[in-house]
Length: 110
Image (cartoon, rainbow, N blue to C red; front, side, top):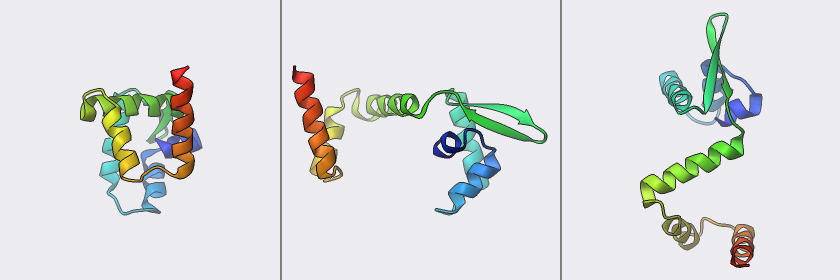
């Protein structure tokens, strides 16, 4: 998704080659993931000569929000608290992120 959002449109080959710069993976893995993302409505494809060209259907922030909600529902039975506790306890949040979280909590209390 990040590659397609960045470029605005991309073929499976273009996404595969971009991801291959960072880690080794199979072309078929990228193809499968893009088909899944299309099936979930995150991507749409058009036929361009011989290759399918994928485009995002929604802005990045909207998709991330939806994916996080789906993850929290599936893994934590809809409660974000265990996820937040894990991130804080596992020190996965920077000082800046912790300060932002505190600010948001205070804001939500008002």
